[in-house]
Image (cartoon, rainbow, N blue to C red; front, side, top):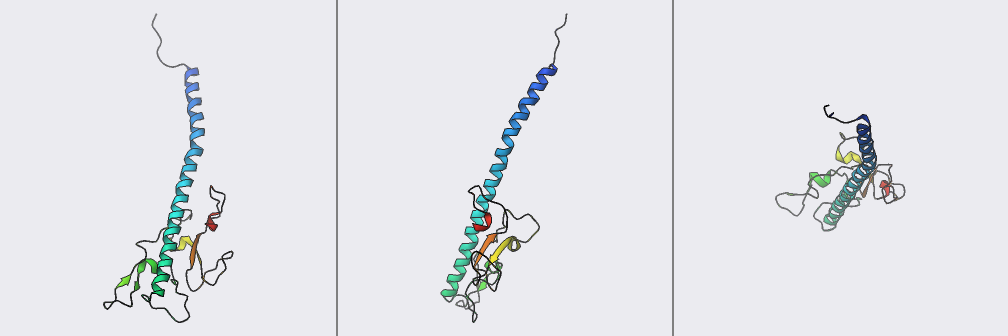
Length: 157
């Protein structure tokens, strides 16, 4: 008699069951890693933009940038941080740049939107608990309705 080769139906079913079990364990961990990575990107982007806004304000205080009458000294648009602002102390009219590029909000759902459109903007005159757009950009926040792994909504970061 010849020895039969191959796998039995029971052996194949056991292998499929083990693979299914492993994938059900791995999927939540992969999703958690994706969320954690996006949260790190959000923290980094907020820190970078807020640092650039503060640097812009300091440049206004140091009289490097011309301050318009009645203005707060914060940038009128987020794009001014990357487009540059004329240095009024430079005889050649050189520009001061505060960011190389404007980062996107990693939780914003539309990938085709411009980076400045992905952020919620708060004007200097608006209260922190009800941010409103105004004549300047005092702060930025995520427009996501989600909640972070730390239990704090992304809008509050």
